[in-house]
Length: 500
Image (tube, rainbow, N blue to C red; front, side):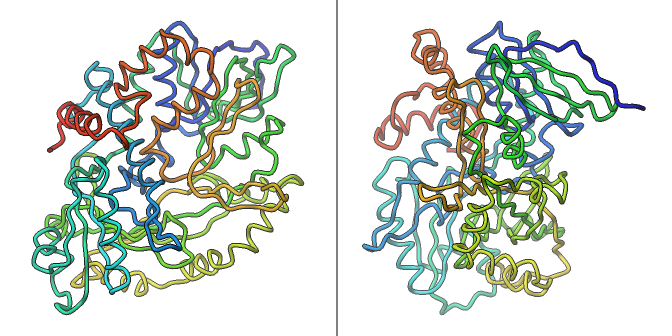
């Protein structure tokens, strides 16, 4: 079929690019806060939540900083830096409040749970690591967010918690573990599909699958014109929108470049792929019920913290180990190998090169990971599961993550882990860049985006009341207010049917 263009533009108040957890979350916020606004959601693939939000592609299945040791680095003075852990733990509690609201309202169908309770544990060996974990526990339990965290160096006690990992382990090995029974496993693919389904059922929301964004440009009246290609029919059309959100995962940086906005200058992307070993032996899967995180190798990216992870995917319990980092020039799992080279422009070539020079250890680590053998991967698994058998495990390719490289004050590049919101000066266009722990903290990230892009509306009593209905703790610190933290958890645990 020949390419044809529809010259009559569709008009929307809000356009969301990408049908993942971020667009779903922002879409529900805006639909509740602006019930008469016309909202469009555009997705390049033929299904919702098929990239980073997909359960098999997403390593972040309930990041709440209970067990992820990369969120609590040790400072030069010997103490543990808890700032990131406190922020993430509080953000995850905010997410649970929002999800509980959707369940209570019947907006999200919950007969098959998208969230399940599962222990979150840290596990280390060697005197230095044991000393660190002990100190981490002492400092974290001073806060209500972490006060239920248990700690043990006793082999017998730890064997009760994680028998699979202790069977066949050297009884003289110096080990330690922490345990948080209030941990969870979240299927973000399932949650996203349920949220998008709610939006589709609203009269003012339209979902367009199989549509690729070709260009985004500012109109004379300061609205945005978006050129969209319908892939299955090979036709293009133009739409016009007052507000645009680019929530397209790894594709966000190339799409932001199309806007020609100054906020996109100096940004580059560094793609990192991931692989997991998945267990096929049902008897082994039954013996482990926890998310157990260890310490990452020196020079590895945060997303490469090794963990033996119980998951619930499509209603079935699974067991994964990894991740093993890889490298691909794709920005999306279903992307093109030309994504990285085509993203390089004059404004970001030096930041990309200088960041590469400064992160030689990371480059060395990735090369080592890419060339490792099946035996090398299995050797790492055996450090966590001594009696593992190779025939019970198969390698699974996860999704792509694009870490941000941004230009600093000196014009050099800085590799930045985590997520970042960028927005035009008038707030009419915004983009979410970066990766982990995005999905778990998606609600707080979208609240921050609303504050940045809709500042006047966010100050009105109407919006404040609606947001507090959705998130009762809004405007208060769960890290500083122990009673509020505990009562909030008690409520969300009941609504989401999680064990206390």
